[in-house]
Length: 272
Image (cartoon, rainbow, N blue to C red; front, side, top):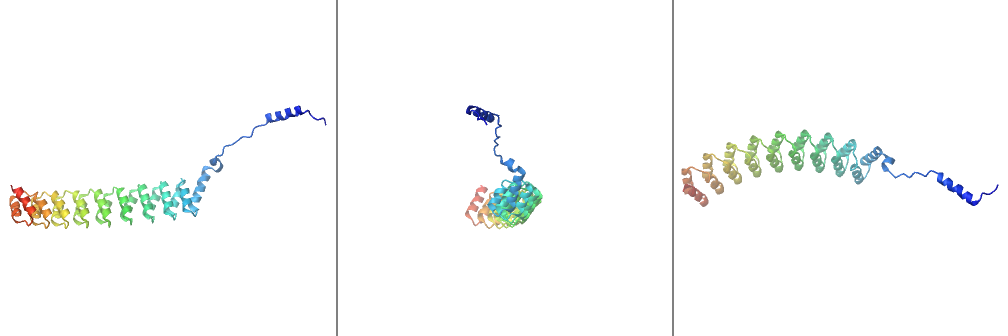
């Protein structure tokens, strides 16, 4: 076979290269390789089954599957993982279940913050074993009867105090003002009422002098004011009452007979 000249061989190779189709170069796309649904399935598997709480937490932070998030929120053994799931949950029934039943108060608090269901929030406000969780639920409800029940019956002073702040029912406020075991709460309730009978009872009978002084400030009944001015065991309370007494004979009696100099001075000043 006759050999081709070298220049002709070069021309043939060059022509072949020019006619060849270039290989297509693809950019790497992880979504094309795995797929969004497949990716979610992997995250779900890790969130439910991985033995490391840290890795389960990482998976939950990327999950959108509400069914899997619900399972994690209700069942994961680690409180931080459950909290991460609660943050991404939108289903009210699951949030309510967590708020009512989770063993960790911080998880329950987070669920309460995200919950809108009034009935579930009322249940938390009345039943949760932690006062801070009950307070958080109480702030998010409008049910006056539940707020009243908390004001009258809750075992925590802080919860009853908050309930009094939220209350508008004067009858219940009157009961709190006369019956609560904490003087600060009785004063808080007394500030919100206008019922003269309740105020008079507090002025005459409350065992705390600061409560009686506040009641005297709110009193307008001259008969009750005279009784307090003449009989209260605390000089500051008597003096507070004397300032509001208008009966000259009562003021004269006090000016002559009261055991405290400042009270007698107050009565004399008003007689001038």
